[in-house]
Image (cartoon, helix red, strand yellow):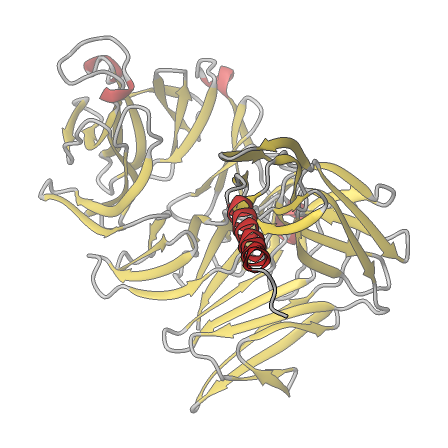
Length: 580
């Protein structure tokens, strides 16, 4: 029996209605509003968790979020956690987290426990093991104990807690690092082959050693010292560096971490025969670099003024006096300023007169220097180039050296504009180099500096024909002066010539025969050129041992025979280069 048509139609409508309801539900589900969450942080790369679930690292964009309240957490090692509760609707929400760095803290554990600590070369002692208030970044940690190998390493400090554990090894040896102008040279220590260049931190027994480098029939041999770690009121040295340039015939030797500077107060130069180094710290001392024997004197000096032209006397300044002594440290003579007739001043500087019988004494004030010529035989002083300062109002005249004929090389600085106004202005700062006739009191300028330029003479060549200078410049009145060039001026007034331009240029010095010029570029690269600046060739780059991040060479002193050069490091280290 067939069903009534009414019931058949009703069943069909029911199925259609169910299907229609399902479609409506699906459409309504797709129309639920969604939101977007953006999370950024400074610094970036921080971990982001939302409602306890890790989502990634900043910068981060989370889309298609259901409306609601979310707990956002931003974390980065070394920084305090950042938390924020946000409400997401059908819009975009942003979280910007400025993370705050945690204080830097370093905890050092050593074995043995009573080892001595140094942080960046500064003594930290035996007892303190936790250090706070440090700066994020690299730090040189050094650990020492008698009878154990020295441990030294550059560690990187992160914000927050940092921990280092050091276990010292038994023994007590120094370290030797050797390099040459070409890698692969054979290295012999006391006649035994120990490797090829470059050789880093090779452990050696304390004492004197013979090092030999061999390459294609060429060789270099020299004496070096191995130092063991020590303690006391000086910074110990246990690293000896040898850097040989076989092609140029020069060798660099040095004892970083300043055994010389710490124990003896710093290297100044050479004795006239070039056999010993002159040191000035706890009194003037003479150091034999082959035997490391030290001859002490009773002379306490503020500064050393150099040897007389004949090399017989070393001049020095002390407390209210100037003095001389002989190379053997004997026959010391002193001259008190007040008894010599030299007025009281803020500071004093001394230069030798070319005749070797007089010392030029600069009595310096804040804005003016007055010069006196001290007769070493009578002990009396007389004014020198009297009234010169008054001839250049608004400018300061500073004597930098003598020409062989007795003329003076001078630096003339100004703090006023060239239009003649008397108002002090940094924009008008400039300095020129000039030659002064002491009798006439007149200056002939060798340079013409623009505003913001500063020509600073460093020394006269032995023949008196050239004066070496540094050129400092500033781009605006508020910039610091930057050494931008090295060069020389011809004392015959034929003009100035720049030898090298660049950054991190350093001092320079004429060789004793005046045929070569040694200067620093790149902060610590030693370059040798002919007197006119030609044929420049790099000798060495003095290595930075980590004592001071911005290491540079700040001084150069030749021996009188031209075979050795002292180099002064900005961190107090002492190096010397020897011509083979």
